[in-house]
Image 1: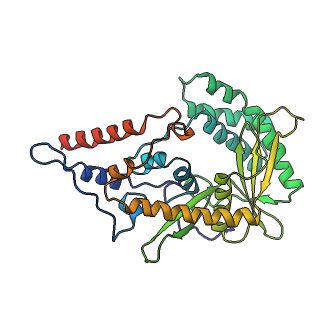
Image 2: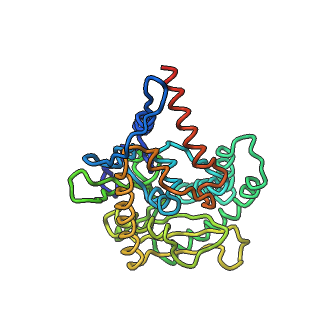
Image 3: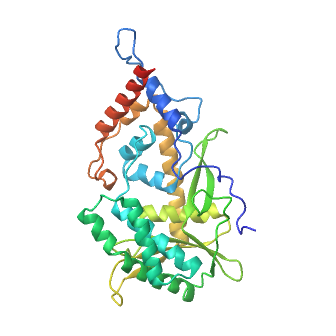
Length: 338
């Protein structure tokens, strides 16, 4: 028996679901031309009677999507409205690989060497066979320290915080082998004015009293001493979406050598951060809905936001103008083929 009720969002594919067919349909309709080949310049028309998220192909959100909109509106527009796929880099591979290795430690009692080998294999599968840049090799070389410090962090969670036993997610209710949590967020008074927000937990524990604890693993070169807004929102969402008032810990693990200070640090979600960030998430979703309502045409919306090139979201990515040009070219070439 699963220790959580069957998740109503289990049929959703990922944490940033975009109906790509609907995105392409909206882009195609926005690029209409007359019989002489001139593009229609139609007046801006607001989205009035339909859920603005669904109108633009956004089927549900995640904490990471809300944080992306907050940190770089142009990045979220490029992803959600233009269908751009942002690439993951070596720091993201590092986090995924470390989690893979520590999962083996938690559920299979793997020793540190086995965990490291699993992490290396996962990292290499993501980087591919021809990616040998300095950044990639530097992150790969630090995986052992992340694993060792991660194991020490997990032992402290068990011995000092009493998180209890790890809980395997039910295999028939998850998309990617993790616990799913979700909740609907209302952004207006009408029945259709809501959107589902979902996320996945790194680890879920339960003690003898069946008190649940959520643990999220973060690998980082710099250990934070307090909650960032982005991580606070993510933690607050996990607590609210779980529904049974769990404790939430974020475990920050660094590659520092053994015995050095701040090799890892554990933050517990407090009530003040929980209430503040949950409110901020809802207010941000309301703002997202209002922005999407401003026009039926995704090109109008993308053209209304500045392109913040300095944001880390855009590192190694094409510019927003290039993404718009590529989307336009792709849609028009599809039309010609038909």
